[in-house]
Length: 115
Image (cartoon, rainbow, N blue to C red; front, side, top):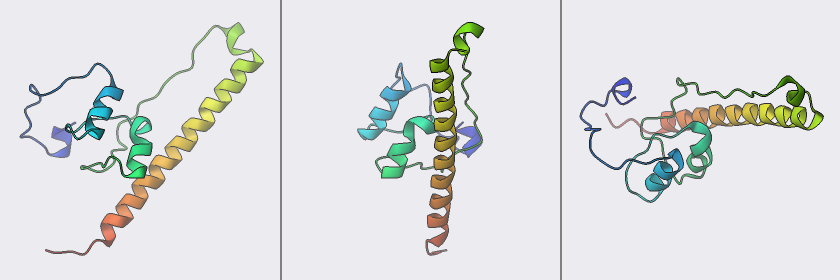
């Protein structure tokens, strides 16, 4: 990820390690460094300004989940409602991330050029 973003002088063999993404995000929120975080997990923090994305919001990595289960369970009405809710939330979250990224780009474009 770092190389993809042109960062080559970071020694990734050093530093803190966390067992969960949540712990890494909390550490970044506590001013202990940077963290890589899934968009869905950091979306609210980015929107509120608690965290910033110093390299911009990267939409090129796709992380998806699959709903799985036995056919009989998937066909149950409560499970079908839950699945529909998950799809709606995923679509809402995706739309919010795109809108947030577009707003950030527009804000960055509005900054005066001091070159």
